[in-house]
Image (tube, one colour):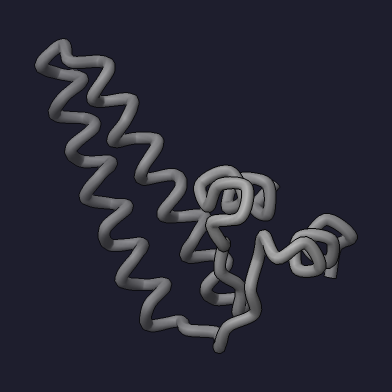
Length: 88
């Protein structure tokens, strides 16, 4: 386990949960749909919403990686931020 993950667990920015591959695959499917949405929006010249959809897709993909590892981002300090830090 990396020092970053250990510190995030200690600071309650991450929680240990049961590793859940099925949940991770569901989240990956949602992320893929967000990527498709981002592509459609970019083609419609709505780059702001395309970026938002792409960002959501990336965050969900990272959350899926955490789920497979038995980790979940907690809201302490911001769940989205914690997901990104843990995945880095």
